[in-house]
Image (cartoon, rainbow, N blue to C red):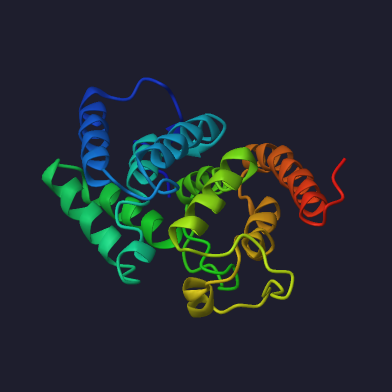
Length: 232
């Protein structure tokens, strides 16, 4: 259902909405000080900017897109003991303090709840045009040159090996197994990153994912060549 805010994205939000966005930006920057490099403020910034670009081509609530992008990792469960409700709760409390409408708060918290990959084997439990945009932007940041950098940064953060030829990727992990996996970082390319191109929601997201996916395939070819001492 469309509401009064559901329009093709523009770059000129209403003054009241801009005040909420500005306050949210400041809040997220403060909350994520010292965060792991793949899930820090700059990850949020990239997703935020990418989401706004994708949304220009979609019929969406622009305030929900911006707030959803800014708050989507405000308390990522993998850094908070697996608690998947902490993020939505923190976002809701903050947005209430800023006077955001209940419809906006509900839409944003649903984005936070349902944006994650979680192994990719679960049925979709919620969908909105705004979730589609923010999820595409988040997934794009897991692809290409930045996605490769993020994967190895997180692998180092968790002290995971780069690669072990004896450990094959697990393509049928449950949500719980995915969340607790300690497999080599190269396996993550097959278990998640290379799957994202075909799971994008919007036509813009699909187009952007294609080139980043191709870059990762080229990277892996070079990686294996160097690993086996065959690089020229």
